Image (cartoon, rainbow, N blue to C red; front, side, top):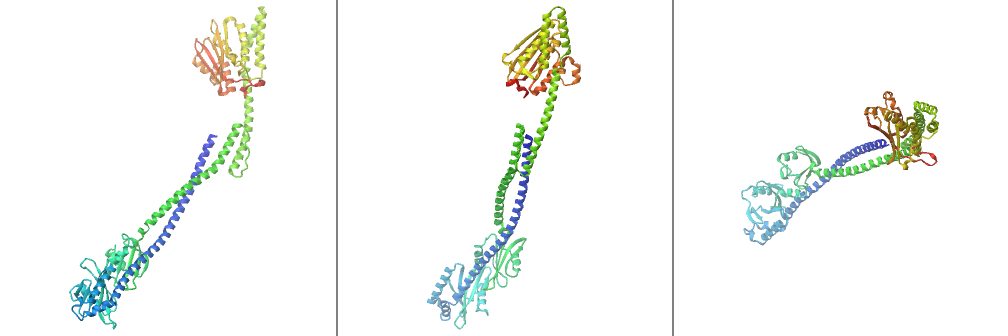
Length: 591
């Protein structure tokens, strides 16, 4: 049954492993598909959201530009500006007039309110003078700075705002100028308001809302000239400027995929280009998805283990119960009750029950046959009494009668009759030790009458073991063997000692003789199962007979040991289980 349990455990492990593998494969496949689908779905949604955020940022940048335009327009139509310009043609001391002071105060206020405006200049076309927050200066000063303003003022489209760019200014930064013409009520040109703005204003505003270390920003004018940029090389500017249209696309630039957003300002047709690397955009999302996937896989793995254990248990528990019932039925030698299950386990269980019933019937048949055969063999061995002993005993009786020793002849005949009555009429396999000893005394009495004083018999039997059961007719053949093969070969005869005592759960009987003894080779041949050896050792057939009877009846619970030394005697030790008879004469040994 232990092999069944071992096989069942192996089957359970295999089933759990197979279940675990199938569910794990399904879980990984499902997770992979879910991850892929989620990745691209989230990627598309993230690109949309990022594009919307970039467009909103560009719109705020463009709103800033429109704000500058509004400031320039407001100042160009402000009465203080127009009055100050008008006064420049009448007096060379305009800077001392109230209106000029009001204008300068106004300019300072504007610059203080709009921190992104670096300077505000007002040009006079009549006297070629210019007002700034720092004072008055002649417009004819030879510099790129003034020449570009002058060109913008007298542009034929001077009624519209003009944007000019200064490269290499005094601070080393690019400047952007918004030139707004100053017109009177008759739309005559009076001069111009110029707002000076640093070009990085737009870049700083863009980077404040978009990751500065990742995104690229480019602002170009109507002709494609760069006004402001951030994080982009000259070669990339050219490549970006070549992209036509507006809107959002996924484009490749220098081997990297970017989210591209293009917007054209409605104010001056300037173009805003914003590029954001998609792989950087997906880094956080990918980590989040991986973390989510790992959590789901961990939870799935835990669920998987629990499910595998549940499946294994649901299969293993009925099998364990089934094997337990089968084992109990075998141990108790009882039939196996049928169970009302229609599944495979129920079918197997009921089939096993039928097989156990059939096997039990066959076992009983075989057991009865074996017991019958053993019984006949035991009887055959018991009846193998030496015919020479009977012949010699009867001859001695005749001799005693002839010698007129009628009493001794009668005693010998009575002992012989008692001996054979016990040997042939008793149906019991085991008898109390005291009866076996009594039978042995009859045998010893006959031998004493035959051999007179040549043999001395001694008995040492513990009284508390008289009722212990022993296999019938096992001591007399051993004593007989001691007489004929131990004592008789000696000229002066000898002594035979029979001792019996209890040792734990065993009944020990020792038959010792001080005869001629035997060698170890003879002892080995004596206890050998080989028939050839037995034929060579016919003189020891009695001991072989006893040993075989003991093995047939007691099995491995008994032992027959022979210790002997040449010229020193022999001791035969018999150990059998110590049984006590039941009431009614039945013996425990037979069970």
